[in-house]
Length: 393
Image (tube, rainbow, N blue to C red):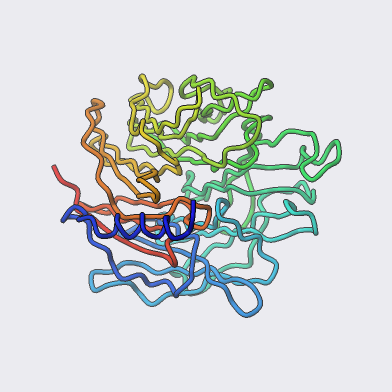
C-alpha cells in the first residue's frame, strides 16, 4: 500500500464524525513519546506512563489526571541500555496506601533478546524511587519481559513475566528450549517471596495479563502446545497453590511463530472477563469470555469483532460485572481503536470508535482504564494521545 493511500485513509477517518461522547484530552507526554500505559491510583485517578527519548537513551515518566488536568510529569527512571520495543512496554502499578511500582527492561548482553526486567518502588507518590531490582534470579543472559504487575496480599507487589532462561539451550538467537511463565511477589523492602513456575511452555512474545479476584490471582497468557497450537491459557492460585494450566477457550489456532498479540484480563469479586485475538482457520477475530466463579470456568466465547481486527486488546471491568473491551481494527486503508461493552449476562452493546489509528508496530497497543463513571484511553499515533468518554447506562 502506497504511503499516500494510507494517509488518505487516515484523513478520511479523521474527517468522519466520532461519537459526541468521545473527547480527546491534552496529553502530558512530550512530542514523539511512545509506549503509553494506564493505571488507576489508590484514590481513583487515571495514571499515564510513557517513554521519552533522551540524548543518551530513554526515560520513563508519568502523570496523574487531576480535576484541573494532568499533574506535572515526573521521571521514574532513565538509562542508556534499555530494551525499548513496541510490544514489550514498561508499566506502572499502584498499591494500597499510595505506594507505586514500575517496571522497564534493560539489556543484559549483546544478544538481540538478552534483557532483564527491572522493578522499582515508590512510597511517596512517585517523587523518589528505590534502586531497581531484578525479580528473576537465574542470571541467564536471556529474554525476560512481557511483565504484568498487580497488588498481591499483605501490601506486596506481584509480578508475572515471560522467562527465557530455558530457551538458551540448543544454540541460536532464541535457542531450542521453551519460553516459561513465572511469578514472584516483592515486598516493600525489595525482598522476594513465593516464586513460582506457572507454565513450562508458552508463546515467546505475547503479552501476559493478571488480575486479583475474590479468591486470589488469575493469570492469562498465550499458551504453546507441542503441535504449535497457541490458544489462551489460564492459571489461578487457590489456597496458596497454583492450578495446572488450562485453556480459556479452544480456538485451535495453529501458528508456527508468535503473533505478538496477547490476552487481557480484568476482575471484580468473582466476576472475570478475558479478551483475546485469534486467527484460527485464517479468520481474524476478537473474542471475550466471562467467568462468575473467579476464573474456575468460563462461558462460551462472545464475538466482539469478526470483521478484520488487528487485535491488541484491553479489557476492564466495573463492580457490577460489566466489562469494556478496546482493540485495534482495520478500517479501509487505515485503522481505528474501538470499544465495546458487555453486560454481566453477556449482552453486547454496539462498538464505538474511539479514535483513528494506524495499524503498524509504531502504533503499539491501545490502553484503557475505568475511572469512576468514565473510560480513559491512551494510544500512540505520532506521539502519545489521550481521550475519555462517559460510561452510559
